[in-house]
Length: 274
Image 1: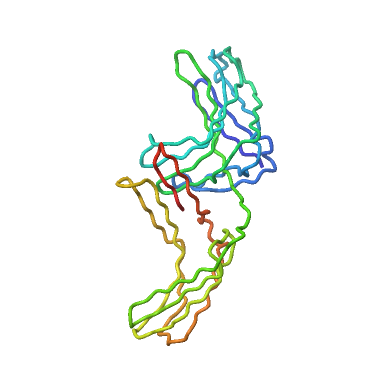
Image 2: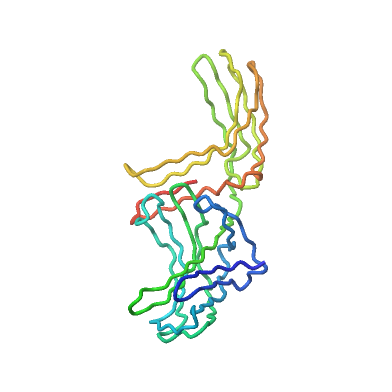
């Protein structure tokens, strides 16, 4: 399979093809409520391929230079002017001259530091993309962007203690929650138990929910978005003191989960958690 992208607009069209397009994995993600298929790169992968530029209408086009950039940036969707570029690399494809017909340009970005994972949220986006630009003296620059996704795989934490917490109402209800560990990967299984230490009120049922939280900004410009990914009823009826309920929750069936991450930048003054 080969994913390519075209930009059709006078006076030229662009096509970006990755070198290993036939074998590289692709993922489907939602961008502006639409499903978009993108190539997936690891944090250590090189980004190589070719850019084809074709002048439309069989004409010639003078230019002041052609370049390609690899950019990683974070943008707040409610304030597009507030962005932070954490990666920016440039490769010159051609010096000033004339484009006649079509021409192919190889590009290569090696040993690129891709420290963050791609993220599409409600209020914030972390994106990696290639930007091809053709400079022109009088008519403005021609630009095409090709987005790709980055997955950062970390080693399993050496210290992953269980979670234990107690909640309740004084002299009425005392519940203890226990989960087998505090960090999980996206295809993990959550094991746990709920213990009823004191029950003096009537309980109809109990649910366990997976909640996705996104926090951006700070102070008066802080935004917090909470989304319930899934909800399960684990008990129906009134428990008695000493009862316990086992929990086994498989995370692999939820495609909209993302790794917890934090990106901080003083100039932008934001924090992104998911």
